[in-house]
Image (tube, rainbow, N blue to C red):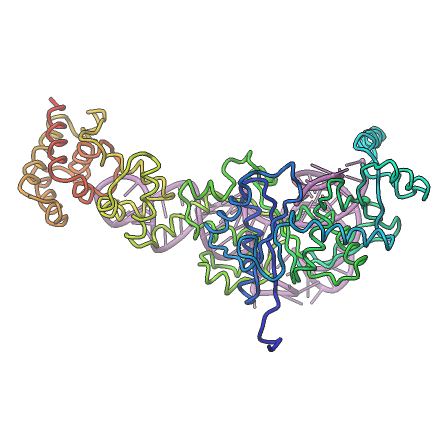
Length: 487
RNA sequence: GCCGCAUUCGUCUAGUGGACCAGGACGCCGCCCUCUCAAGGCGGAGAUCAGGGGUUCGAACCCCCUAUGCGGCACCA
Protein backbone atom coordinates (compact mmCIF):
# COMPACT_ATOMS: atom_id res chain seq x y z
CA UNK A 1 0.00 0.00 0.00
CA UNK A 2 1.46 3.28 -1.09
CA UNK A 3 1.42 5.94 1.61
CA UNK A 4 1.21 8.75 -0.84
CA UNK A 5 -1.99 7.57 -2.48
CA UNK A 6 -3.85 6.55 0.67
CA UNK A 7 -5.06 9.36 2.87
CA UNK A 8 -4.37 8.90 6.56
CA UNK A 9 -6.73 11.68 7.47
CA UNK A 10 -9.04 10.59 10.26
CA UNK A 11 -11.48 13.06 11.76
CA UNK A 12 -13.98 12.44 14.45
CA UNK A 13 -17.26 13.96 15.58
CA UNK A 14 -17.66 13.24 19.26
CA UNK A 15 -21.00 14.37 20.67
CA UNK A 16 -22.43 13.41 24.01
CA UNK A 17 -25.94 11.99 23.97
CA UNK A 18 -27.56 14.74 26.01
CA UNK A 19 -30.28 15.66 23.56
CA UNK A 20 -30.88 16.51 19.92
CA UNK A 21 -27.70 18.02 18.45
CA UNK A 22 -28.11 21.70 17.78
CA UNK A 23 -26.91 23.73 14.86
CA UNK A 24 -23.57 24.50 16.48
CA UNK A 25 -22.67 20.88 17.15
CA UNK A 26 -23.76 19.87 13.71
CA UNK A 27 -21.72 22.60 12.08
CA UNK A 28 -18.69 21.05 13.77
CA UNK A 29 -19.75 17.65 12.48
CA UNK A 30 -20.12 19.10 9.00
CA UNK A 31 -16.59 20.54 9.00
CA UNK A 32 -15.26 17.20 10.22
CA UNK A 33 -17.16 15.39 7.51
CA UNK A 34 -16.11 17.77 4.78
CA UNK A 35 -12.47 17.55 5.71
CA UNK A 36 -12.60 13.77 5.73
CA UNK A 37 -14.37 13.61 2.38
CA UNK A 38 -12.22 16.31 0.83
CA UNK A 39 -9.08 14.41 1.68
CA UNK A 40 -10.42 10.94 1.06
CA UNK A 41 -9.95 10.19 4.73
CA UNK A 42 -12.25 8.71 7.34
CA UNK A 43 -15.11 10.34 9.23
CA UNK A 44 -15.59 8.74 12.61
CA UNK A 45 -18.45 8.98 15.03
CA UNK A 46 -17.62 8.53 18.69
CA UNK A 47 -20.12 8.82 21.48
CA UNK A 48 -18.90 10.61 24.59
CA UNK A 49 -21.31 9.14 27.10
CA UNK A 50 -19.21 9.51 30.21
CA UNK A 51 -21.72 11.48 32.22
CA UNK A 52 -24.45 9.16 33.33
CA UNK A 53 -26.38 11.96 34.94
CA UNK A 54 -26.82 14.10 31.83
CA UNK A 55 -27.53 11.31 29.42
CA UNK A 56 -30.86 11.24 27.59
CA UNK A 57 -32.45 7.85 26.82
CA UNK A 58 -32.76 8.27 23.06
CA UNK A 59 -29.73 10.52 22.84
CA UNK A 60 -27.83 8.26 20.50
CA UNK A 61 -30.79 7.91 18.15
CA UNK A 62 -31.20 11.69 17.97
CA UNK A 63 -27.57 12.06 16.98
CA UNK A 64 -27.71 9.38 14.31
CA UNK A 65 -30.96 10.78 12.95
CA UNK A 66 -29.57 14.28 12.71
CA UNK A 67 -26.48 13.14 10.85
CA UNK A 68 -28.50 10.95 8.54
CA UNK A 69 -30.91 13.73 7.73
CA UNK A 70 -28.02 15.85 6.52
CA UNK A 71 -26.38 12.93 4.81
CA UNK A 72 -23.23 13.10 6.90
CA UNK A 73 -22.42 9.44 6.64
CA UNK A 74 -19.69 8.07 8.88
CA UNK A 75 -17.15 5.36 8.23
CA UNK A 76 -16.67 4.12 11.77
CA UNK A 77 -19.04 4.44 14.69
CA UNK A 78 -21.05 2.71 17.38
CA UNK A 79 -23.52 1.21 14.92
CA UNK A 80 -21.17 0.29 12.09
CA UNK A 81 -18.10 -0.62 14.07
CA UNK A 82 -14.56 -0.22 12.81
CA UNK A 83 -11.01 -1.21 13.59
CA UNK A 84 -10.62 1.14 16.55
CA UNK A 85 -13.75 0.44 18.58
CA UNK A 86 -15.63 0.39 20.71
CA UNK A 87 -16.89 3.82 19.72
CA UNK A 88 -18.92 4.37 22.84
CA UNK A 89 -16.79 5.66 25.66
CA UNK A 90 -18.88 3.92 28.27
CA UNK A 91 -17.56 0.67 26.77
CA UNK A 92 -13.94 1.71 27.12
CA UNK A 93 -13.74 2.25 30.86
CA UNK A 94 -10.93 -0.26 31.37
CA UNK A 95 -8.79 1.60 28.87
CA UNK A 96 -9.18 4.91 30.67
CA UNK A 97 -8.53 3.39 34.06
CA UNK A 98 -5.36 1.76 32.87
CA UNK A 99 -4.10 4.98 31.34
CA UNK A 100 -4.99 7.06 34.36
CA UNK A 101 -3.16 4.69 36.66
CA UNK A 102 -0.18 4.80 34.40
CA UNK A 103 -0.05 8.54 34.94
CA UNK A 104 -0.28 8.10 38.71
CA UNK A 105 2.57 5.62 38.60
CA UNK A 106 4.78 8.06 36.76
CA UNK A 107 3.83 10.99 38.98
CA UNK A 108 1.88 12.96 36.38
CA UNK A 109 -1.37 12.41 38.25
CA UNK A 110 -2.44 11.58 41.80
CA UNK A 111 -5.28 10.14 43.83
CA UNK A 112 -7.58 12.61 45.49
CA UNK A 113 -9.93 11.69 48.33
CA UNK A 114 -11.64 15.02 48.81
CA UNK A 115 -15.37 14.86 49.41
CA UNK A 116 -17.86 16.81 47.37
CA UNK A 117 -18.67 18.78 50.52
CA UNK A 118 -15.09 19.81 51.07
CA UNK A 119 -14.71 20.90 47.47
CA UNK A 120 -17.92 22.84 47.66
CA UNK A 121 -16.79 24.63 50.82
CA UNK A 122 -13.41 25.34 49.26
CA UNK A 123 -15.01 26.93 46.22
CA UNK A 124 -17.33 29.05 48.32
CA UNK A 125 -14.44 30.41 50.31
CA UNK A 126 -12.44 31.14 47.19
CA UNK A 127 -15.36 32.99 45.73
CA UNK A 128 -15.83 34.97 48.92
CA UNK A 129 -12.21 36.02 48.65
CA UNK A 130 -12.77 36.97 45.02
CA UNK A 131 -10.40 34.33 43.77
CA UNK A 132 -10.67 32.03 40.82
CA UNK A 133 -12.13 28.72 41.94
CA UNK A 134 -9.52 26.03 41.60
CA UNK A 135 -8.54 22.84 43.37
CA UNK A 136 -6.31 23.66 46.33
CA UNK A 137 -3.87 20.79 45.84
CA UNK A 138 -4.86 19.27 49.18
CA UNK A 139 -4.39 15.67 48.12
CA UNK A 140 -1.45 16.41 45.91
CA UNK A 141 0.56 16.98 49.05
CA UNK A 142 -0.64 14.00 51.07
CA UNK A 143 2.02 12.00 52.92
CA UNK A 144 2.35 8.27 52.21
CA UNK A 145 0.84 7.57 55.63
CA UNK A 146 -2.17 9.75 54.96
CA UNK A 147 -2.74 8.04 51.64
CA UNK A 148 -2.48 4.66 53.25
CA UNK A 149 -5.05 5.71 55.83
CA UNK A 150 -7.51 6.76 53.15
CA UNK A 151 -6.96 3.51 51.29
CA UNK A 152 -7.50 1.45 54.45
CA UNK A 153 -10.71 3.30 55.15
CA UNK A 154 -11.82 2.56 51.60
CA UNK A 155 -12.55 6.22 50.90
CA UNK A 156 -13.82 6.98 47.41
CA UNK A 157 -11.16 8.54 45.24
CA UNK A 158 -10.60 10.21 41.93
CA UNK A 159 -7.47 10.70 39.87
CA UNK A 160 -6.34 14.25 39.25
CA UNK A 161 -3.86 15.62 36.77
CA UNK A 162 -0.78 17.11 38.47
CA UNK A 163 -0.47 20.33 36.50
CA UNK A 164 2.95 22.01 36.79
CA UNK A 165 2.76 25.11 38.99
CA UNK A 166 5.16 27.04 36.81
CA UNK A 167 5.61 27.71 33.13
CA UNK A 168 3.07 27.89 30.40
CA UNK A 169 1.58 25.63 27.82
CA UNK A 170 1.16 26.37 24.15
CA UNK A 171 -0.97 24.73 21.50
CA UNK A 172 -0.50 25.33 17.82
CA UNK A 173 -4.01 25.86 16.52
CA UNK A 174 -4.56 25.83 12.78
CA UNK A 175 -7.33 28.37 13.04
CA UNK A 176 -6.05 30.72 15.73
CA UNK A 177 -2.31 30.31 15.51
CA UNK A 178 -0.46 29.74 18.77
CA UNK A 179 -2.58 29.67 21.92
CA UNK A 180 -0.81 30.02 25.25
CA UNK A 181 -2.03 29.75 28.83
CA UNK A 182 0.03 29.95 32.04
CA UNK A 183 0.07 26.67 33.95
CA UNK A 184 -0.78 28.43 37.18
CA UNK A 185 -4.16 29.20 35.65
CA UNK A 186 -4.85 25.56 34.93
CA UNK A 187 -6.73 23.44 37.44
CA UNK A 188 -5.66 20.02 38.66
CA UNK A 189 -8.47 18.53 36.67
CA UNK A 190 -10.14 15.28 37.63
CA UNK A 191 -9.29 12.66 35.01
CA UNK A 192 -11.02 9.62 36.43
CA UNK A 193 -14.18 10.05 38.47
CA UNK A 194 -14.99 8.03 41.57
CA UNK A 195 -17.59 6.07 39.60
CA UNK A 196 -14.82 4.80 37.36
CA UNK A 197 -15.82 6.93 34.38
CA UNK A 198 -13.26 9.24 32.80
CA UNK A 199 -13.86 12.94 32.42
CA UNK A 200 -13.90 14.46 28.97
CA UNK A 201 -10.27 15.52 29.24
CA UNK A 202 -8.83 12.07 29.78
CA UNK A 203 -11.19 10.37 27.37
CA UNK A 204 -10.63 12.66 24.39
CA UNK A 205 -6.88 12.49 24.59
CA UNK A 206 -6.75 8.73 25.05
CA UNK A 207 -9.32 8.04 22.36
CA UNK A 208 -8.03 10.55 19.83
CA UNK A 209 -4.64 8.92 20.15
CA UNK A 210 -5.82 5.34 20.16
CA UNK A 211 -8.18 5.96 17.27
CA UNK A 212 -5.42 7.62 15.29
CA UNK A 213 -7.30 10.86 14.89
CA UNK A 214 -5.27 13.11 12.60
CA UNK A 215 -7.12 16.40 13.07
CA UNK A 216 -9.00 17.55 16.12
CA UNK A 217 -11.78 20.07 15.54
CA UNK A 218 -14.03 21.29 18.33
CA UNK A 219 -15.87 24.37 19.50
CA UNK A 220 -14.13 27.50 20.67
CA UNK A 221 -15.47 27.01 24.16
CA UNK A 222 -12.83 24.33 24.65
CA UNK A 223 -9.93 26.71 24.30
CA UNK A 224 -9.47 27.30 28.05
CA UNK A 225 -8.89 23.61 28.68
CA UNK A 226 -6.40 22.81 25.94
CA UNK A 227 -3.42 22.90 28.38
CA UNK A 228 -4.84 19.88 30.17
CA UNK A 229 -4.90 18.00 26.92
CA UNK A 230 -1.44 19.10 25.86
CA UNK A 231 -0.08 18.10 29.25
CA UNK A 232 -1.73 14.71 28.93
CA UNK A 233 -0.27 14.12 25.48
CA UNK A 234 3.13 15.01 26.86
CA UNK A 235 2.77 12.81 29.91
CA UNK A 236 1.83 9.87 27.73
CA UNK A 237 4.64 10.68 25.36
CA UNK A 238 2.26 10.97 22.41
CA UNK A 239 2.37 13.25 19.43
CA UNK A 240 -0.24 16.01 19.47
CA UNK A 241 -2.40 16.00 16.34
CA UNK A 242 -3.22 19.35 14.71
CA UNK A 243 -6.00 21.13 16.59
CA UNK A 244 -8.48 23.69 15.37
CA UNK A 245 -10.95 25.51 17.60
CA UNK A 246 -13.98 26.45 15.55
CA UNK A 247 -15.74 29.74 16.21
CA UNK A 248 -19.09 29.30 17.92
CA UNK A 249 -22.44 29.68 16.28
CA UNK A 250 -24.38 32.47 17.95
CA UNK A 251 -28.04 33.39 18.28
CA UNK A 252 -29.33 36.82 17.20
CA UNK A 253 -28.40 38.14 20.65
CA UNK A 254 -24.77 37.19 20.06
CA UNK A 255 -24.91 34.53 22.74
CA UNK A 256 -24.04 30.92 22.21
CA UNK A 257 -26.96 29.27 20.44
CA UNK A 258 -29.32 27.55 22.86
CA UNK A 259 -32.95 26.54 23.31
CA UNK A 260 -33.78 30.11 24.25
CA UNK A 261 -33.33 31.01 20.60
CA UNK A 262 -36.26 28.86 19.51
CA UNK A 263 -35.62 26.04 17.10
CA UNK A 264 -31.97 25.10 17.25
CA UNK A 265 -31.87 21.38 16.72
CA UNK A 266 -31.46 20.05 13.24
CA UNK A 267 -34.46 17.81 13.71
CA UNK A 268 -36.65 20.81 14.50
CA UNK A 269 -35.56 22.46 11.28
CA UNK A 270 -36.33 19.28 9.41
CA UNK A 271 -39.82 19.21 10.92
CA UNK A 272 -40.39 22.83 9.99
CA UNK A 273 -39.74 22.00 6.38
CA UNK A 274 -36.15 22.92 5.77
CA UNK A 275 -34.25 20.90 3.20
CA UNK A 276 -30.99 19.23 4.16
CA UNK A 277 -29.44 20.88 1.11
CA UNK A 278 -30.25 24.33 2.47
CA UNK A 279 -29.15 23.58 6.01
CA UNK A 280 -25.90 22.12 4.78
CA UNK A 281 -25.23 25.14 2.60
CA UNK A 282 -25.97 27.65 5.34
CA UNK A 283 -24.02 25.79 7.99
CA UNK A 284 -21.00 25.52 5.76
CA UNK A 285 -20.99 29.27 5.25
CA UNK A 286 -21.09 29.97 8.97
CA UNK A 287 -17.43 30.36 9.74
CA UNK A 288 -16.19 29.31 6.34
CA UNK A 289 -16.11 30.85 2.89
CA UNK A 290 -14.64 29.92 -0.42
CA UNK A 291 -14.24 33.18 -2.29
CA UNK A 292 -15.77 36.63 -2.55
CA UNK A 293 -18.92 35.65 -4.41
CA UNK A 294 -20.01 32.04 -4.28
CA UNK A 295 -22.99 31.45 -2.01
CA UNK A 296 -24.54 28.29 -3.39
CA UNK A 297 -22.72 25.10 -2.57
CA UNK A 298 -24.02 21.62 -3.21
CA UNK A 299 -22.66 18.84 -1.06
CA UNK A 300 -20.33 17.77 -3.87
CA UNK A 301 -19.11 21.31 -4.31
CA UNK A 302 -18.49 21.68 -0.58
CA UNK A 303 -16.45 18.51 -0.47
CA UNK A 304 -14.47 19.76 -3.40
CA UNK A 305 -13.86 23.28 -2.06
CA UNK A 306 -13.54 22.76 1.68
CA UNK A 307 -10.13 23.51 3.16
CA UNK A 308 -9.09 24.30 6.71
CA UNK A 309 -7.32 27.53 5.88
CA UNK A 310 -10.57 29.22 4.91
CA UNK A 311 -12.15 28.72 8.33
CA UNK A 312 -13.04 31.99 10.03
CA UNK A 313 -11.77 32.96 13.48
CA UNK A 314 -14.69 35.04 14.75
CA UNK A 315 -18.01 33.64 15.96
CA UNK A 316 -20.91 33.79 13.49
CA UNK A 317 -24.54 34.64 14.03
CA UNK A 318 -27.07 32.17 12.75
CA UNK A 319 -29.08 33.96 10.04
CA UNK A 320 -32.62 32.70 9.62
CA UNK A 321 -33.43 35.02 6.73
CA UNK A 322 -30.57 33.59 4.76
CA UNK A 323 -31.67 30.07 5.61
CA UNK A 324 -35.13 30.90 4.27
CA UNK A 325 -33.64 32.25 1.08
CA UNK A 326 -31.46 29.19 0.58
CA UNK A 327 -34.34 26.89 1.38
CA UNK A 328 -36.52 28.62 -1.20
CA UNK A 329 -33.71 28.33 -3.69
CA UNK A 330 -33.29 24.61 -3.17
CA UNK A 331 -37.05 24.05 -3.26
CA UNK A 332 -37.16 25.75 -6.65
CA UNK A 333 -34.36 23.47 -7.82
CA UNK A 334 -36.47 20.40 -7.06
CA UNK A 335 -38.39 18.68 -9.83
CA UNK A 336 -42.17 18.80 -9.45
CA UNK A 337 -42.21 15.10 -8.63
CA UNK A 338 -39.54 15.46 -5.99
CA UNK A 339 -41.28 18.44 -4.45
CA UNK A 340 -44.63 16.64 -4.30
CA UNK A 341 -42.91 13.70 -2.66
CA UNK A 342 -41.27 15.85 -0.01
CA UNK A 343 -44.49 17.74 0.60
CA UNK A 344 -46.56 14.65 1.23
CA UNK A 345 -45.61 14.02 4.87
CA UNK A 346 -46.30 17.63 5.82
CA UNK A 347 -49.92 17.31 4.79
CA UNK A 348 -50.18 14.01 6.61
CA UNK A 349 -48.81 15.51 9.77
CA UNK A 350 -51.14 18.51 9.52
CA UNK A 351 -54.01 16.04 9.28
CA UNK A 352 -55.01 17.42 5.92
CA UNK A 353 -53.90 14.56 3.71
CA UNK A 354 -53.80 15.15 -0.03
CA UNK A 355 -53.62 12.35 -2.54
CA UNK A 356 -50.44 12.16 -4.54
CA UNK A 357 -52.03 13.10 -7.85
CA UNK A 358 -53.49 16.32 -6.45
CA UNK A 359 -50.26 17.12 -4.71
CA UNK A 360 -48.31 16.55 -7.89
CA UNK A 361 -50.63 18.91 -9.78
CA UNK A 362 -50.45 21.52 -7.03
CA UNK A 363 -46.70 21.41 -6.40
CA UNK A 364 -45.62 23.44 -9.44
CA UNK A 365 -48.12 26.16 -8.54
CA UNK A 366 -46.51 26.85 -5.18
CA UNK A 367 -42.95 25.84 -5.85
CA UNK A 368 -41.53 29.30 -6.23
CA UNK A 369 -43.67 30.63 -3.41
CA UNK A 370 -42.43 28.31 -0.69
CA UNK A 371 -39.87 29.25 1.89
CA UNK A 372 -40.46 26.12 3.89
CA UNK A 373 -42.19 22.90 2.93
CA UNK A 374 -44.62 23.41 5.78
CA UNK A 375 -45.89 26.62 4.13
CA UNK A 376 -47.62 24.47 1.54
CA UNK A 377 -50.37 23.38 3.90
CA UNK A 378 -51.72 26.90 4.34
CA UNK A 379 -51.37 27.63 0.64
CA UNK A 380 -53.47 24.59 -0.15
CA UNK A 381 -56.29 25.37 2.24
CA UNK A 382 -58.78 26.12 -0.53
CA UNK A 383 -58.39 22.60 -1.93
CA UNK A 384 -60.16 21.17 1.09
CA UNK A 385 -63.88 21.10 1.68
CA UNK A 386 -66.61 22.05 -0.68
CA UNK A 387 -66.91 25.70 0.14
CA UNK A 388 -64.47 28.37 1.19
CA UNK A 389 -65.17 30.93 3.88
CA UNK A 390 -64.47 34.60 3.30
CA UNK A 391 -65.89 38.07 3.69
CA UNK A 392 -68.11 38.74 0.67
CA UNK A 393 -66.79 42.28 0.48
CA UNK A 394 -63.50 40.86 -0.75
CA UNK A 395 -65.24 39.97 -3.99
CA UNK A 396 -65.53 43.64 -4.79
CA UNK A 397 -62.11 44.82 -5.81
CA UNK A 398 -60.66 48.25 -6.17
CA UNK A 399 -62.83 50.51 -8.33
CA UNK A 400 -65.59 47.93 -8.46
CA UNK A 401 -69.06 47.62 -7.01
CA UNK A 402 -71.32 44.68 -6.29
CA UNK A 403 -72.87 44.86 -9.75
CA UNK A 404 -69.57 44.69 -11.62
CA UNK A 405 -68.34 41.90 -9.38
CA UNK A 406 -71.46 39.94 -10.12
CA UNK A 407 -71.09 40.63 -13.82
CA UNK A 408 -67.54 39.32 -13.72
CA UNK A 409 -68.60 36.16 -11.96
CA UNK A 410 -71.42 35.58 -14.37
CA UNK A 411 -69.13 36.04 -17.34
CA UNK A 412 -66.54 33.73 -15.82
CA UNK A 413 -69.20 31.16 -15.13
CA UNK A 414 -70.39 31.05 -18.70
CA UNK A 415 -66.84 30.62 -19.94
CA UNK A 416 -66.03 27.89 -17.46
CA UNK A 417 -69.26 26.01 -17.99
CA UNK A 418 -68.38 25.39 -21.58
CA UNK A 419 -65.28 23.42 -20.65
CA UNK A 420 -65.65 19.87 -19.48
CA UNK A 421 -62.18 19.94 -17.94
CA UNK A 422 -59.92 22.80 -16.95
CA UNK A 423 -56.84 21.22 -18.38
CA UNK A 424 -56.34 23.71 -21.19
CA UNK A 425 -55.27 26.61 -19.03
CA UNK A 426 -54.12 28.75 -21.93
CA UNK A 427 -57.43 28.50 -23.73
CA UNK A 428 -59.46 29.22 -20.62
CA UNK A 429 -57.30 32.15 -19.74
CA UNK A 430 -57.72 33.59 -23.23
CA UNK A 431 -61.48 33.29 -23.01
CA UNK A 432 -61.62 34.82 -19.56
CA UNK A 433 -59.50 37.73 -20.71
CA UNK A 434 -61.83 38.26 -23.62
CA UNK A 435 -64.77 38.23 -21.22
CA UNK A 436 -63.03 40.77 -19.03
CA UNK A 437 -62.39 42.97 -22.09
CA UNK A 438 -66.04 42.84 -23.05
CA UNK A 439 -66.96 44.08 -19.59
CA UNK A 440 -64.35 46.79 -19.88
CA UNK A 441 -62.68 45.62 -16.69
CA UNK A 442 -59.09 45.44 -15.72
CA UNK A 443 -57.74 41.94 -15.60
CA UNK A 444 -56.67 42.47 -12.01
CA UNK A 445 -60.29 43.26 -11.12
CA UNK A 446 -61.82 40.44 -13.09
CA UNK A 447 -59.38 37.79 -11.96
CA UNK A 448 -59.32 39.20 -8.45
CA UNK A 449 -63.02 38.63 -8.01
CA UNK A 450 -62.81 35.14 -9.44
CA UNK A 451 -59.83 34.41 -7.22
CA UNK A 452 -61.72 35.29 -4.06
CA UNK A 453 -64.75 33.33 -5.19
CA UNK A 454 -62.75 30.16 -5.75
CA UNK A 455 -59.94 30.36 -3.21
CA UNK A 456 -61.48 32.60 -0.58
CA UNK A 457 -58.33 34.70 -0.59
CA UNK A 458 -56.96 37.76 -2.32
CA UNK A 459 -53.59 36.06 -2.53
CA UNK A 460 -53.34 32.62 -4.04
CA UNK A 461 -51.29 30.49 -6.39
CA UNK A 462 -51.78 31.29 -10.10
CA UNK A 463 -55.50 31.28 -10.84
CA UNK A 464 -55.75 29.06 -13.91
CA UNK A 465 -53.73 26.35 -12.27
CA UNK A 466 -55.73 26.70 -9.09
CA UNK A 467 -59.03 26.31 -10.95
CA UNK A 468 -57.67 23.21 -12.58
CA UNK A 469 -56.68 21.61 -9.29
CA UNK A 470 -59.91 22.60 -7.56
CA UNK A 471 -61.80 21.04 -10.44
CA UNK A 472 -64.76 22.02 -12.57
CA UNK A 473 -67.65 21.01 -10.38
CA UNK A 474 -66.36 22.59 -7.19
CA UNK A 475 -65.25 25.71 -9.00
CA UNK A 476 -68.63 26.30 -10.55
CA UNK A 477 -70.40 25.78 -7.24
CA UNK A 478 -68.14 28.32 -5.58
CA UNK A 479 -68.67 30.85 -8.35
CA UNK A 480 -72.42 30.44 -8.10
CA UNK A 481 -72.35 30.85 -4.37
CA UNK A 482 -70.21 33.98 -4.64
CA UNK A 483 -72.64 35.44 -7.12
CA UNK A 484 -75.51 34.77 -4.77
CA UNK A 485 -73.70 36.39 -1.87
CA UNK A 486 -73.47 39.66 -3.78
CA UNK A 487 -77.21 40.32 -3.85
C1' G B 1 -12.86 38.50 40.09
C1' C B 2 -9.17 35.64 37.22
C1' C B 3 -7.79 33.58 32.43
C1' G B 4 -8.61 33.37 27.28
C1' C B 5 -10.71 34.40 22.41
C1' A B 6 -12.75 37.82 19.10
C1' U B 7 -13.71 42.77 16.59
C1' U B 8 -14.89 44.83 7.98
C1' C B 9 -22.34 47.16 5.91
C1' G B 10 -28.26 44.94 10.47
C1' U B 11 -26.37 39.56 9.26
C1' C B 12 -22.82 35.92 6.67
C1' U B 13 -18.41 37.25 4.44
C1' A B 14 -14.07 38.92 0.45
C1' G B 15 -9.67 41.22 1.69
C1' U B 16 -2.75 38.98 4.19
C1' G B 17 1.15 46.97 2.74
C1' G B 18 -0.31 50.27 -2.98
C1' A B 19 -5.46 47.10 -7.95
C1' C B 20 -10.29 49.39 -1.81
C1' C B 21 -12.95 56.94 -1.36
C1' A B 22 -13.58 48.46 0.73
C1' G B 23 -16.25 43.64 -3.29
C1' G B 24 -20.31 39.74 -2.99
C1' A B 25 -24.68 37.51 -0.60
C1' C B 26 -29.13 37.67 2.74
C1' G B 27 -32.39 41.30 4.48
C1' C B 28 -34.40 46.33 3.35
C1' C B 29 -36.14 50.20 -0.42
C1' G B 30 -37.46 51.50 -5.63
C1' C B 31 -38.44 50.23 -10.76
C1' C B 32 -39.58 46.43 -14.53
C1' C B 33 -42.35 41.93 -15.50
C1' U B 34 -47.35 40.55 -13.95
C1' C B 35 -54.45 37.89 -12.72
C1' U B 36 -52.75 38.36 -6.61
C1' C B 37 -48.45 36.69 -4.09
C1' A B 38 -43.99 34.95 -5.30
C1' A B 39 -39.92 33.99 -8.56
C1' G B 40 -36.84 36.65 -11.99
C1' G B 41 -34.33 41.21 -14.03
C1' C B 42 -32.43 46.10 -13.05
C1' G B 43 -31.08 49.90 -9.60
C1' G B 44 -30.44 52.05 -4.55
C1' A B 45 -29.48 52.95 0.59
C1' G B 46 -26.17 50.60 3.98
C1' A B 47 -19.04 49.80 6.80
C1' U B 48 -15.20 57.01 9.28
C1' C B 49 -12.62 48.54 8.27
C1' A B 50 -14.28 49.01 17.31
C1' G B 51 -11.28 53.52 19.22
C1' G B 52 -6.43 55.70 20.03
C1' G B 53 -1.36 55.68 19.26
C1' G B 54 2.79 54.10 16.42
C1' U B 55 5.90 51.64 11.98
C1' U B 56 5.90 53.01 6.66
C1' C B 57 6.41 57.19 0.98
C1' G B 58 1.74 54.39 1.76
C1' A B 59 -2.32 50.33 6.43
C1' A B 60 -8.63 47.11 6.82
C1' C B 61 -4.04 44.46 6.39
C1' C B 62 2.31 45.04 10.83
C1' C B 63 3.22 46.59 16.44
C1' C B 64 1.29 48.65 21.20
C1' C B 65 -2.63 50.36 24.36
C1' U B 66 -7.83 50.91 25.38
C1' A B 67 -12.93 49.58 24.78
C1' U B 68 -16.68 46.32 23.90
C1' G B 69 -18.64 41.48 23.13
C1' C B 70 -18.24 36.48 23.96
C1' G B 71 -16.25 32.05 26.24
C1' G B 72 -14.09 29.26 30.35
C1' C B 73 -13.10 28.87 35.66
C1' A B 74 -17.42 20.98 37.95
C1' C B 75 -16.08 13.95 40.05
C1' C B 76 -20.60 18.37 32.57
C1' A B 77 -19.33 17.79 27.87
